[in-house]
Image (cartoon, rainbow, N blue to C red; front, top):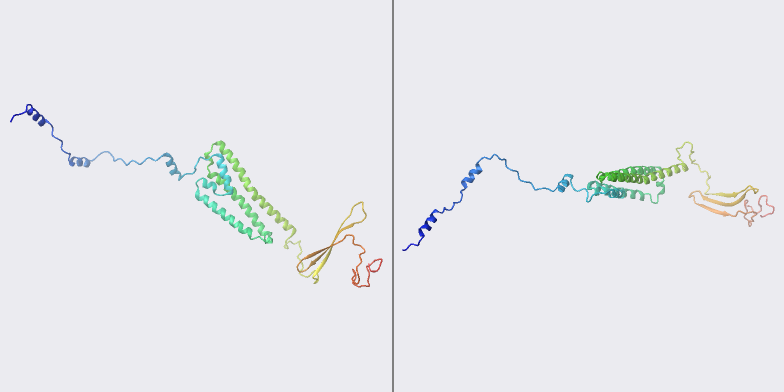
Length: 295
């Protein structure tokens, strides 16, 4: 067999090539793991939380959808006068806002029922106890609405405004508090004035100066009583007094029903047909001091 030239050199080159490295066994790795280490194990890295989420979590939730301005704070405070709890809901205080709305609805229902109880019963509305109750309710309502406006303004966070905004909003809310209390004060004053008027016109029997009505019948058993009502006028350039109007009021004693008869003011020398004459019932009698018989 012939040998190729350079064959021995190729074989020698292959022999010199380093053999492939065998795969590392698990023994050295286990040895490194079992060896004690001076370094403390690193804690797992927590995911980064954005700053705005951290603020929301610290405050318990979002408070404002947008940054509150001076006008918005004044507007929401004014709205809470009509709809209590609106400002608290806007400020993120849902529980307080819903409680205020519920109390307002209950107050409206109670007021409606109380007002309907006096329909057709105006005498009960004019009682002293009723007027005192209405006056006290008006005073309490004024204080409650004053506190409502003040707490609504504080809940909206006026401290977030600049100095000028705080001054403007504070003045506006102060005027709003006075305006809210004015209707309640007017109501209480009107009811108390009406109460004093009723007591002056219809004094109580407990007053020692007022004499109670006698139980005896002052009309002596009569069923009807007639009253003559005469109105007249006089002047310095005339002699005597002239009769302007004459009316007869006939009152039923039992029911109090009254009938008015209007008489002419120039009624004089009236002739009554026989046999009925006035004031005498006898057909032969004549009017006293009457110049002619039968006048």
